[in-house]
Image (cartoon, rainbow, N blue to C red; front, side, top):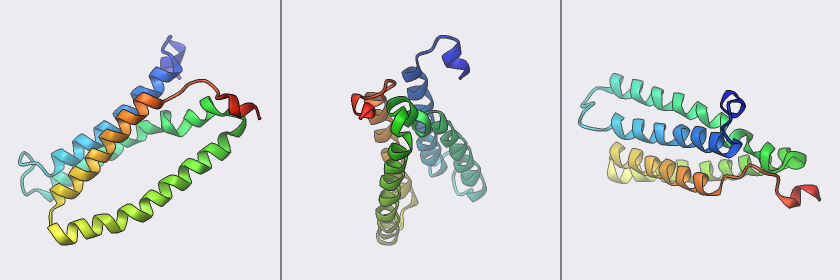
Length: 138
């Protein structure tokens, strides 16, 4: 809100917060399994925790954007998005287990997750809207 009040566009604020909220965790996951951290589970855990902190920034991005693009139907849009996210979780958890069981590679698992974050951030930045869609008037 402070950024918007100071003259930033709604779209710019949504993109900034969502992008940092996704690129930050991606970087932390990659750092946690990097040679820099080495065999320190405690340090890796702390770095992943910092990544989770970055994720909180998405509350000012995707978590409120439904109010920008569909103010009259924001609940429906939010519910559809959460349903899609839940379905993705239903698929990704067994896939992650399979990947880890067959490769025994946490760096691969975290790398795939980081790639997903980066792709999501790029798509978000490209498609994020800040005005109500015409369909919201129906």
